[in-house]
Image (cartoon, rainbow, N blue to C red; front, side, top):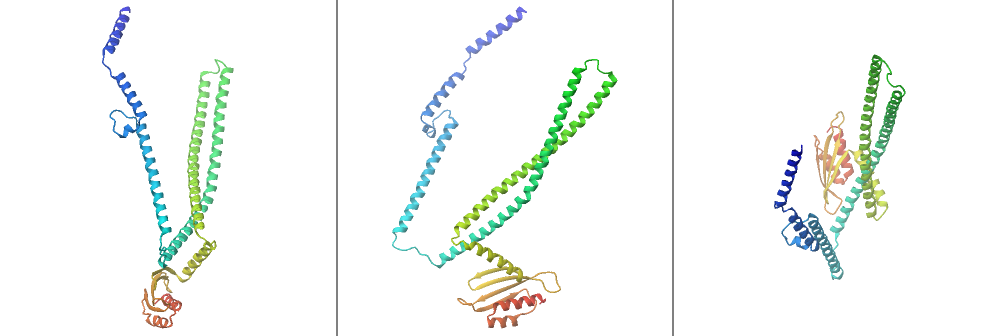
Length: 350
């Protein structure tokens, strides 16, 4: 035994001697790294100058962040100076800005686009309101189910704990020998079966609780998404209302939109497109008498330039010739009568 200890001691001393005599660069590398890091910390600009050696990524990140901030400030100053220069040139210019009918037309088109965006935003907001009203009761119902199942799981866990405590007390109150071996085995088997059933019920309840929690979580995420979309739509609606100077425009626009939709429904008008200032394209979907298929009727109206006089009419989609109807109404310059007569011919099966 002493020989074994002496051999182990000799081996340890030999290992120590070998470590002391070995040329390890760990200490020297640590000192060199600390020296270089202290130099870079004092002058971070050395990183961009390409100093050889190890470099801390944090210092590089700080240097890059500072350069990005400087470039952003420089860009903002450039934009600010450019805007000031353009504003000064506009103010001190001898010639007034050229604003013509085309500019007004562009402004009108832009205003109509904004109105369309506002109407679409209102429709989406109403849809989101409807979704929230539909999903809120479902989420509440799922939450109530989850709470009920959680209470049942807690009650079952409490019962299991009480049963275990009761069993422990019975074992302490009735030391060995308690029962005969057959009776103890029978009681143990019945208890095992009962505990297995309770564990199965608990597992099922836990599974149901997890499922309901996932559904509640998904419902909460959906409600939050709808709430965010609702806030965004409200912001868009408010922004659109602020851009309109006259407060009656929104109401008049809604009235005009509803009236136009009703008019299209009554006359079976599908599309109405203004090809140019004196050219109008109308497309109707008419169901002839005795047929279930809808037929498309295309009417092109050409007006004389700078007037309301009807110059030419083209009708497509009818099997019969309607030149007599077109000629009569063309001479009378009766556009509503012409459209009504053509649609009457189409509905009659022409």
